[in-house]
Image (cartoon, rainbow, N blue to C red; front, side, top):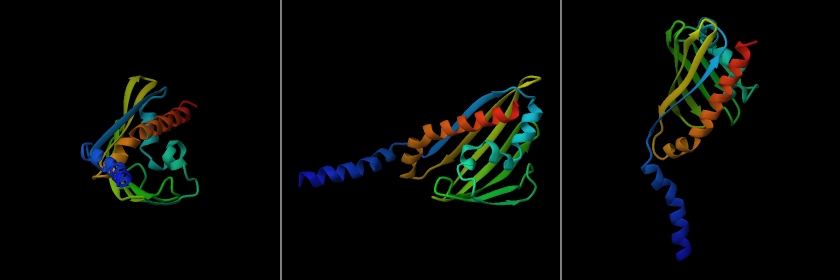
Amino acid sequence: MTIIIIIAAIIALPFIIALFLPKEYALERNIVINAPKQTVFDYIKHIKNQENYSKWVMADPDMKRNLSGTDGTIGFIYAWDGNKKVGAGEQEITGLADGERITTQLRFIRPFKNTALTYQTTQPLSDHSTKVAWGMAGKSPYPMNLMTALLKGVLNKDLDTSLANLKNILEK
């Protein structure tokens, strides 16, 4: 009987922990790129360019893609269907402030349904130096909020890798 209670407690513990974790999350990473602000913005506003620098998009070079609308403009949708690492979903440009900010909505279909809001901003530090921020925010319902909390460090690392890739491309 003691073993059954211990097993039940081990199974229940993550669900109990998730009760006390926030359901909303937000993260942001930054990098300085030695290129003019408009050059950087003109590159990042095109979602298709993420194929060259986003760790997530690059995780499955064979994934199926469906593009609709005009890339770099509000309403453009980049849909994907890939392997287990990237799943399936779509990203839609929902806002643009030329030279300053692009906002998108991510709609995940697989491995789980969820939405997130993302943004990338550019801030000039000099005529040839730009600070780029890439952020993401969303909600994870109980008990998925436990997984989100556990993956936050991985997501930050992936954003750092993607931003470093972007820096390498734009500083060539």
